[in-house]
Length: 153
Image (cartoon, rainbow, N blue to C red; front, side, top):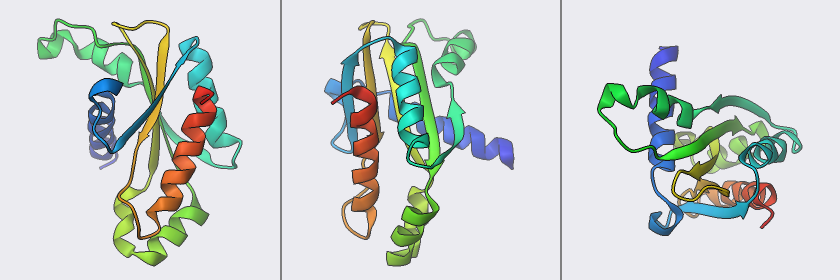
């Protein structure tokens, strides 16, 4: 069960990371900064932890894609680096779920950070925007604040 959950989570992260900023849909928010990837990834972690949240899972999606490239017949390297940070807030999540119990579908929350092979040195930080209303605006605001903080935007 744990492995099925992690596999599903990895697939979700791949879908989030697979679009470049110019091609991202309206529900994906991305901020770009020119800085070392490790510094920006650390800033994403800090943006979460400094608010009192715990990073539940730190996914190394770029490493997984590199490791499995030959297995899936991939010939193109997509990312120099790509990671995601999963966390939840008991306070925010409770408020959101009290407004609509179906909002459980949006928890945990994820911030991603990546640097493509095609644009080395340009690090992208973002999140998938939740549908407006039903308490989800608070989550969008929180994720946006964190992504902006980590990217210096």
